[in-house]
Image (cartoon, rainbow, N blue to C red; front, side, top):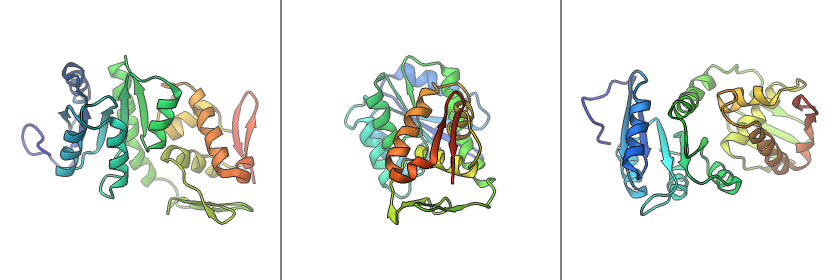
Length: 240
């Protein structure tokens, strides 16, 4: 990737902004580059995004959905399908506000979904939160990396979940939500706490998002989904 300026140091955080509105892309670049050792590259189409990522994999992608040539959904799908980029954090940025679009983006593997108009400060906070997650994961205690129950088996190191011996495909967010609940089994976790632990920040998105993801996780887990209990007025709890 042709990053502007001098060669970056190993500690530099590289962010690719894929946005076809130049003024908006420039504002995002200015906001994100306020962070120390952060450099932003801008491209304005889906095919240009794939070319830029192929040249040099960024640390995070801010991805608009309504793009020329290839849509943001298609770019996300292709990035998640390639071994070199399947774990690159992606924040979708779009004027589409329907729950269907949000769910579609998250199911494709996006880490977050920001709708226009948006606050630059909030976007920067979400970027920081997403970039923190890999570092937080490396400091997670090794104990309890595998859970084995009557119906559910989850190997959190191998990123593998089975119910009744059958593999279950979860989105990244659903997997992290399950991990958080299992690691705190027997404890009631509030929606705000789950937002902080799984999404990486507190109260920047509606707590309704937690309920939606819990519902989808329960549905995918089938009978094992009954282990995720709703504690009315408080939150959720994973039980044996």
